[in-house]
Image (cartoon, rainbow, N blue to C red; front, side, top):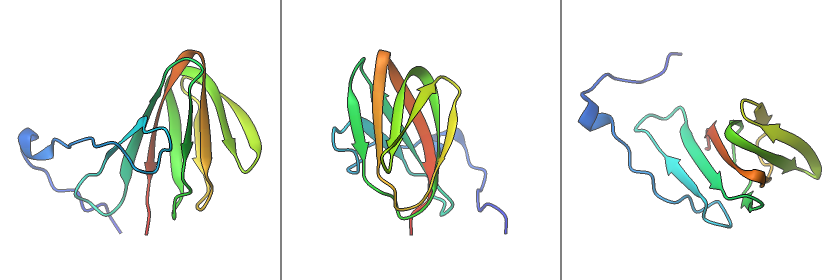
Length: 112
């Protein structure tokens, strides 16, 4: 199957970015395009801040776009820095902790 994306003018493609209710610290916004394939989360953390994301019903892929820190999933901690990409299995909560320079993380996911 192919993606269901349809081309439209720029104004019709702009998305609101409400705060995502799956982040315990409310530091994540969600971009939810009008397609069934995926949505995107963007988490912005100040230096030393921590965010806990609820487990998602589907898999996700996340990338650190700025800064450094750690991800913790199922008790396993991984060092993160700009450009690192991680796959997160379905039904796994994610803890994101920013390092001394803060951390910005983006990720695509599918639920349901």
